[in-house]
Every structure is written in C-alpha cells, then in structure tokens.
Amino acid sequence: MTSSAPGVLVLAATPIGQVDDAPPRLVAELSTADVIAAEDTRRLKRLTTDLGVTLSGRVVSYFEGNEGARTPVLLEALLAGERVLLVTDAGMPSVSDPGYRLVAAAVEHDVRVTAVPGPSAVLTALAVSGLPVDRFCFEGFLPRKAGERSRRLAALAAEQRTMVFFEAPHRTALALGAMADAFGDDRPGAVCRELTKTHEEVRRGGLRELAAWAGEGVRGEVTIVVQGADDGPSVPNDPNAWRELVAGLEASGASRKDAILEIAKRAGVPKREVYDAVHKP
Image 1 (tube, helix red, strand yellow):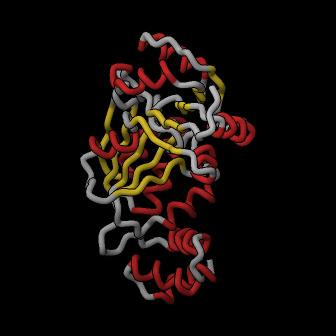
Image 2 (spheres, one colour; image 1 turned 90 degrees about the horizontal axis):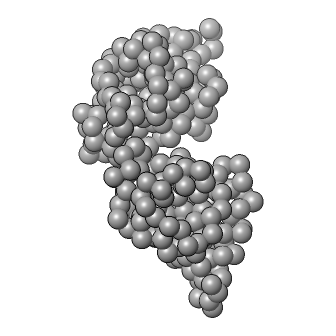
Image 3 (cartoon, one colour; image 1 turned 180 degrees about the vertical axis):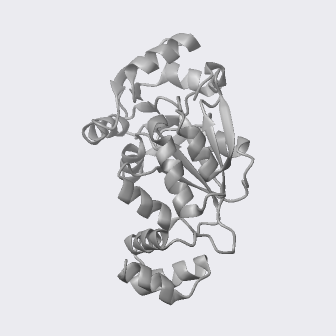
C-alpha cells in the first residue's frame, strides 16, 4: 500500500495476564494493519491464536536491541501511507517498553499517532494497592547497581505523590530494602505480583516488612507501589543514610549546600550534623 498522505501509527495495549482483557479494537487493528511491529513475534503469534485473529499485514520484530535500526524502516512505511500497529509483550507500548523512539519520529514527521487503550500494570497496581491515587508518578525500573539505585531513591525521598515502580522478581527484595533505607522502614507500600493472572497476589505493609517477605523469594511480574512522603521528617536518623540522600540530591542537580540543608530539614536535625556526616564520615 502506498499513498501520498502519511499513514497512522497505532499503539495498542495488550493483555498483562488474561487474554479476555484484550480490547475489541485490538482484534480489529491486528486484522487490518499493514505492518505489525511486535516486541516478541512468538508472543504475538500466541496472542493472535488465542484471539482467533488472522494477520493480513507483514510482521516485524521491534525490541530494545533493534529499536534504533528498525525505527527508520517503520517511519518509511508510515510516510508511504501505511498503517503501522505497535504491540509489546504486555501493556501499553513505550511505557517501560519499546515505542518512544518511533512515536517521537512519527510526531517529528507529522504522522498521526493514536492508541488502542487497554490493560496497564501501572494503573492496575495503583488501583488495587490501597494507597492514595489522587496524585502519582511512574518511575519505571530502578538502576541495577546499588549505588545508582540508592541515589535515585534518595532523590525521591521527599516525593509526596504515590510512586509506582517495575522490578524484576530476583531484585525485588533488594529494591524494597533500598526503599526502606531511603524512605523509612514504615513507609507504606504494596507489592503487586502476577496481576490479573491465576496466581495474582498483592502484599501490603511497611517497606522493611515487605523487604523481609520478598527475601524469601518472589516469582512473576512485579509492580511496586509506595506511598509518597508526608510534610514531616522523611529520612531516618542515620548519618550513613544522610550521606546517600545528599549524594542523591547532588546527582539530581542540587548544590551540596542545598542538599545538606534539605536533608537536615527532612531529618529534623541541625544542618551541622548532616554537614559533619557528609564531610567527616
């Protein structure tokens, strides 16, 4: 198919567990798209089999490893007037999944971008967590390295919105322990595991309690929801924690002076104590 007018990029949400959660429009888009770009073509085949869909368009892989090289190819198809459907393994494309580069390229070239709304682990976990949902932020996956992870969390210590994270099951205990160090042992959280699947589980409690639970082993897809900070002190009375938190704020662009002042305020201690912890460990 070729046309003088640009085509359309369709971002389609796919089930995060139950295939029955697939929106009806997903079936229609899969059946009629000129190009289907899939994060995993084998999972796409299973999905279309379960949905009873016959694909008429050509299927190409589009995942983290080839996203840079494949984006220009898909953009060329869009500029030629084709309808390109982008699906990932689960949930909405570009939300901690491939898609952002293609969306940005399409927007830059005045190609229409639309979406098939549907299942989302972020919103599902938030809804069932039992934590405040009026204001929230999505932080994706934390860094794998301990130091980088601590600095990222330190920069979020005063965040007052409910926070949503993705995490690998084998790193869940480490992540929760680091959150307890940064946010406090008793900060309320929820670990949402295998959402919408047969073994769905939502574990709620303080972060240190959740870390101990996760230390016994966690399986499946994991989404962590953490309540935001209140207006009072939000850091533990621990000089080691103060150093990490100051380093996190500095990494986010704050000056050391301002970072020390901020952590002293959150901890409810004189700034000289935090200064000494940073400069005289």
